[in-house]
Structures are given as structure tokens and as C-alpha cells.
Image (tube, rainbow, N blue to C red; front, top):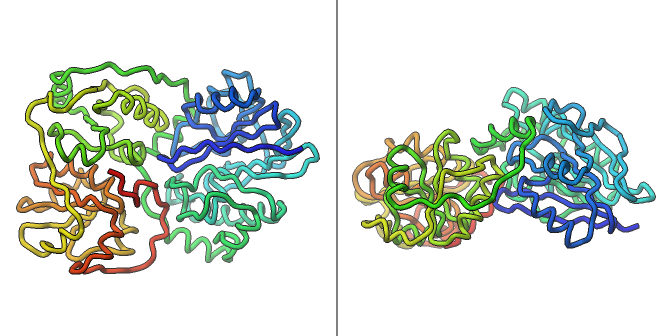
Length: 468
């Protein structure tokens, strides 16, 4: 009996959920909170949902698993060791759970968390056709071991090494590996490789299967960089049992209401592309275009106790942003504005340039280059002379920037640089956007590039692609 596995990708968070089915009954694995995407597949394929499983209590998104299971009267399968606040079907290591004509078999795989479970997908002959590995075995990498705090990181890294070697020993080489993280998520310990793999592939590429335990621990811990601040909200939300979402239209606000909200400390987020924002924007707004990893970087920087207002010239942008934000626990922003920014009166503008333009002026008294990438990215390669403040630290450190001349801002793909512009301009400094991927500077004469060790950190899609 052939089983089908359908991927449900969430590229802006770098995660992947799954539906496995036998043609009649389906199993959902690690679903995101907007479960209408799961429902659409069930309807399209004519499937009945027989179960929902969580590999672990996620730290990078709010799960839709509980609500999905409740709506379908399906089993919600969670590790017995997870101290959750809701009713569920608990499982322990080495347990077989039937789902329709197939089954899953649990494998306790601590490392990303202590209670992490992987699930082998068994056909009617009890043969493993795949393994859902969550944040354990990724494609060429592993889930990071430090999300529960640095005090646990070394122990969890050691457990992760053991978990991957256990999986490799239990499963045949041809078994497909289906991780949840590793597609740009900061839950990955290091950059992953490829879009699919088998156990045989992992034996050839995965550091946990190639290195001895202590060497793996040392290498993994040394390669860890920062992760988004919003992660601290995700674990508690998932343990409490997330409720249903409301994606109905937000209240529309007038220009006067927008400005009043801004004056009381609300974050006004412009969802248009960064080139549109640079060409004309309401002073005081922030650029987080929907053409990049908006939820990751807005969630990283946004104080969850503040009001959030969304604005764009297209209503669909507001709707898409709502969907992105519920996945990280921002359920109902205070309001929205849809229309032309020209209605706000006098607009701000920001000059956009290239690295070739920079080569002609770098080193002058009136130009200061600011790199807002993470430390690991900068250590791999950077421009000299330049200043360095990672985007997630910029608001608290903006007063370290010079007040004279212009601040020319770059990152790896220009998305984070655009997000930095509002902070710089709100501090009464003049910002200029270098609207190119960092790789472009490597082909420009006249720039001094300093290189160091290879950056092994996870890569979010918008970190390296300069959409406009």
C-alpha cells in the first residue's frame, strides 16, 4: 500500500507541515495555526482527518493542531512528557498508533527539546515509508539545542547526537526524512541542504552522523547565533493550548486615526515593497514588506505589549499580513489603513543606491556604512570601513550612530536594511538604502572586503534575495 505525503510549506517562517494519507484517512503533522490550508487539502483529496501529531511544543510558531483536531473529532497526539493544559492523546517511546489503514510509531528523539518525538510512517505491512522528524534530524543538519536556555544547550546537543544515531540505526536507508524545521527557520542549528533527503543521504551529510559526540557538541554550540525574540512567546502559547484564529478584516482607520495611534506609541507597519516605501512614506512608519520574511523580522523587533497598525495600498496585503502574524501569536492588530499614502500629506523619501555607488564615496566624512546583519554573517565577510549593529539590536543602540552625514544601510538581501530605515530616520538621522544583495559588493572594484570563517547559520529566504 502506497502512502502519500503532502508538504504544506510556510516559507516566511522556514517551516514545513505535512499531511500523510492512504487515500481515505489523513494524518496532519505539526500544522501551523492557519488550519484552513489543511482543510483545503482534505477537501480537495476527499480525506477524513484521523489524527494530528506534534513532534514537540514549537518555539517558532503557534500550533493549529489542537483546534484542527477538535474541529474534526480527531486524535491530538502529543508526547506524554509535555506538561500541557489541554486534553490530548498521549504517547510514549516505541508506541504504535493506528491511523486508518496505516500507523505511526513513536521514537523519542530529545535534543531540540527534552520531550521531542519523531514519528515513523508505517504502511499496512508495518514497513516505514518515512519519518517525521520535526526539529530532530533536518536535511543535513539538526534542530538547535539552546531554545530552552544556554544552561541546557550542551546536554541537549549531546542528546541530539544520540537521537540522530538512533534514527539512523532504526530505519532503512531508503526511508524519506520529513523535518518540520530547516527551510529557513532559526530553529535549525546550522544551514540545511536540499529540499528532501533519505536516511542514506543523512548518513553522508549530517554532522551528527559524521562526527563523534563531543566533536558534534563543540561544533554545534560554536555555530549557534541569536534567534528571534518572539520565540519566548511561542512555547507558553503552545503549552496552554492555542485557540481558533480570526482572519476577518481589521477595522479600517483614517489618516487622522493613524497619526493619533502613532503619537501614542503604536507601531505603524507599511507592508508595501521597500522601493515603494523609499519613494514615499509616512514619517514614523516602518518598512516590513510582504515580499520577505515579514513575520520573522517584525516578530523579532515588535514589542508584543504595543499596539500594531498595518498599512498598504492594497487590501490583500493586510489580509496576507494577518495570516502571517497569527502564526506567531499576533492575533488582532489594532487596525489598518488601505489607500494611497499621499493622503497623509507631506511624505518622507529615502534614497536608494547600489554597492557600485558606495565604492565612489566610501571613506568620505559624509558617508557611514551600517551593516545590520547578524554577527555570524558579518564575521564571514564584511566591508571595511563599516559600522555593525544587528537589526534586532538597532532600536536600543541607534544613538551609537553618527549624527552627521548619511547612514548607508545594507544587509544580505536588502530586506532587513529596509526595516532599519524607519528606526534610523525616526532618530533624526539621514538613511540611505543599499538596495542590493550583499553578494553584489563582491563584484565591485574599490570596496575593501574582509573575510573570515564560513557562516553556518540558518538562512531565511529574504536574507539573501533582494526582491523589490
